[in-house]
Length: 390
Image 1 (cartoon, rainbow, N blue to C red):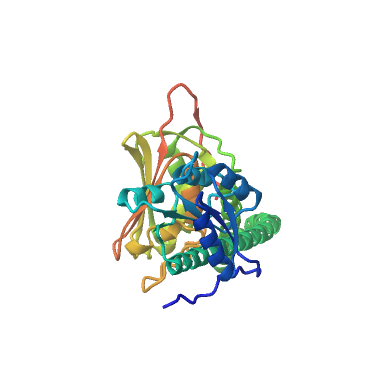
Image 2: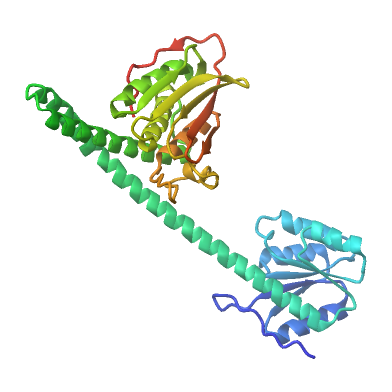
């Protein structure tokens, strides 16, 4: 039965061009006739050098390649094609009179997508040409779609970056005004007003932290975030972070277990924000009466810090997702909205050469941990401010 498939057409309507590389005139004539009949545009080259020149002059959509040719054989030509940035994606279909499994393996290893033995059935060659052109066309379409998605994502990120950047000034003014109002409220001696004011100020600072995280994630992704590494006592950073977050505890216990100095090579401000983000995340999901423990020590030649809570815990399938941009956990536990804070933590720790992870069990809480390189001796230890900016 004759194979009746029609030629694959390109999205732009252009005819596929196929390069035939064979030193046997009869084979070239037979293949070219079949390709023209099926609606393709064939070209021919009788040796490897001529084939390379023809392919570079006009990139083919597919190459039918003989193995045994004078001078450069098919395997060598295929390797050179795959080494060329402009030609490496062109599918190569080998056609050879050698029906040897080892030769077929060799063809695939050097970059071929298929192998047909001579004497061949014209219907088989046509079917394989059709299939590989369709696969190649779909791959190119997927690549175009992927590039478009990347462009759209970049446009979205740029828009969000501009909006968030413009939010910083009004948030700064709002925080400053609320801080000044706090002094006036002391004379009123009204607990309810004082409570509402603290809530408003805390949420403004939370928004400021979110905008800083978003802008800094963008800088970290682009490799433009300055990391000022210094010899710093990680224990002091942990204590400062705990003190700055203590006002948000609201009936939850904050403890620090860091009795000894742990001198790490890090940017104290950025690592302080990592601590604050992890503590803030723990406070958010720990119930009233629960406990958040911050610990600092040394393990396996690195500085090790952790924040442990007594919240609902996180299912194992979400342990990686929560560190992704806008990643969140869905389900009965309602541990929602982890947003960008953990993404910032991950990227900031990795920018220091450390790693970050989580250990969690449902209904028993979570332990977020990260490592940082220990500092080398000989540099002065930097002081840490009593309040870490979030």
